[in-house]
Amino acid sequence: MSKRSFSYKLFCNWVGLHHRFYYPEHTYIGMERIPEDGNAVVMVGNHQNCMMDPLNVEVALDDRKAYCLVRGDVFRVNKYFTKFLHWLGLLPVNRLNFEGLQGNGNAREANKNTFSDARKWLIQGNTLILFPEAGHQNKRWLGYFSLGYLNLAFEAAEEADFKKEVYVMPFGHHYGNYFHSRYGLVLNYGEPIALSPFYEKYKEKPRTTMREVNALVEKQISSLMLDIRDLDHYTAIDALRNSDFGKAYARKQGLNPDKLAEKLEADKRLVAALPKESPALDLLEKVERETLDKGMRDWVVAQRPGRLNLACRIALLVLGAPLAVASLPAWSELLIPRLMFGKKINGAIDVMFRSTWTFAFAVLAISPLVWIVPSVVLLFVEWWIGLAYLVLFPLMVWYLVGYTKLWRKTCGVSRYVALGERGKELSERREQAIKELVNCEL
Image (cartoon, rainbow, N blue to C red; front, side, top):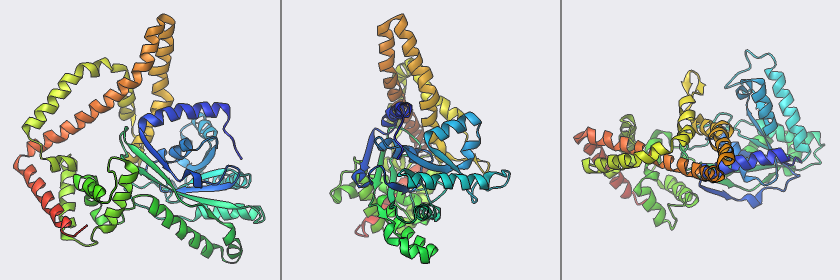
């Protein structure tokens, strides 16, 4: 098994500090079910937020260093970054359906080396993190699983002459918000699946056995996350669960909508209770898509804000502006990653990288330069100034997160007010659709 080195522990503590700020409400469920360190464990989960997904698992673990198989293209930035990724325990996999193997003659051979190393580490009692969907999803649903993770797990057992137990540990991610900080996170672990009962069957029918185990894994992960399979009405369902109606439904179920883990359970029940075919859902889907097309969110149409509401928001922005200007050093945490964000997939910016980019840039570059270094320098000038800056910088970031959130919501309200009667019509159609859904006795 692989324990964390002293330097790796320091790095994890630094990352964990930022992680707790980024996700102020983080709930880990079922951690006690994870097999003890020293066992061969393949952790398998839904993939919804790029590199934040494996990071969340690593932060939640105690003294265990888990290795993670990740997309191979991130290892092609430069050799120094590649060394850093290897130090983190990340292993490159070149995916045929995504990056392909063309243009890199060593890609196929590199995959063989990665899987060979992964099998050896498993046999030695280490933990691997894999995401069988290969690519991350841009919605809250579980995609198609490739069987590569089970092929790796069973081959590791075979290399150990089927004398070593290998576990598959399903887990599910759920985020309060994919793109912005200061929201919640739920990391939900299921029951570990021991592969030894399947060894004999695997020897005779490997593919059939892997499909059987994969079905068990998929079923668990689907139950541990919010799995919205009705993609034709996805926009409507996602808006509905986040609306006042969704919160009221949670309370009706005896759950607290202000706690993300309980809200997740309520959302799963709501999704299961919604009719499969409904004119009301069709209408709500049209309304929600039109709302998004006009640059607004569902809550704006639901609240029907008027000119007075807009004026109050603008006044708060004006009153808060001096403090926002005084927090100028902290703007770098918010603006620089956003300005530099530009991960492109097939010529388009992949927005699901936004959290990863923002978080990683803050941890590795911005915080040391604009928080720690100035604090140390100021300590040698006037110790109390350095100490004050060290304490106040996180508060400045916290304030600016709230200030920018107010700005975004004010922009949404201004768009609604500018629509006039067309905005009111959207609100009326939305209310009509929800009333019809309520009549379905959800």
